[in-house]
Length: 96
Image (cartoon, rainbow, N blue to C red; front, side, top):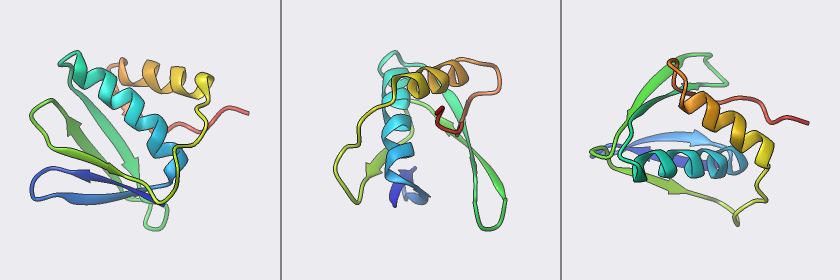
């Protein structure tokens, strides 16, 4: 299980390594272009939804328990499309 550390002082958001790796690629690409977006995260246990604002001014750190997984290009494109939509980046299921 990986962790997205958001803000300073940081808030830890647990996300599995595979999902986090794909999110990292999308988020870093947006921030390199100095673009902002929101990220919707739903807690699996409580079903609570959080929306995080991602901008170049916010400190982020991606922490993994294992090595970088293989990237699913179709999933990555789905996440990019989501990040560029009015609703912002959402954790979408990985396509089969």
